[in-house]
Image 1 (cartoon, helix red, strand yellow):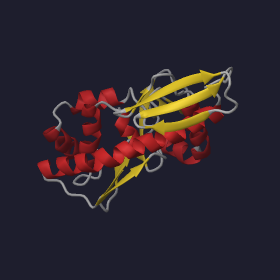
Image 2: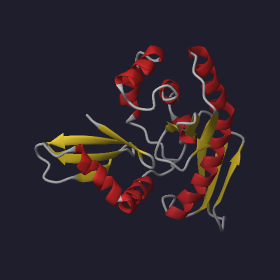
Image 3: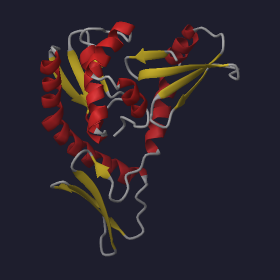
Length: 232
């Protein structure tokens, strides 16, 4: 199944189908973009759709994010938990991080799924994930690079992306702080994937051989990653 790697939207899956009557695009449950093509339509048609539909694609991704709500006792990263309390005497919602807990206190009758509340929770979640990511990701990337003979220039942490990670031609590896929500084996797969790009700036057979040399189960991990979303 072919893919298109877009600088803004990341890896986009392209599927050809005899049932498809036109070129169409949707957001998969894991937040990844998928394009459907009629069976004999060239890949160029998918690339043209991306180029002409960027504003609409951004809207679709924003709508997808709205469907992912923060809920009671949700695990955040490797060490944080979301605790939600309702208090009848409370006039305004309060949301703060206390140690490894993200405490949400709501007045009675408040709907936690409202965009304003979710956005405030998200802001605190970003702070928590960034703290974890700063502590863990640079050390883990450095370890894997030294262990397997890779080199890179610098690491950048981000959250404003629909991608788990990326590697520039100058050797800058960007990592999404949402990686801290992944199981460790999938987190490592993403880091190995980006390190492999320091040698192969593509997804050729040579690239996947680089990945497989370190992560023999990369196909399993790659498939499992599609069940997760990099959105925070």
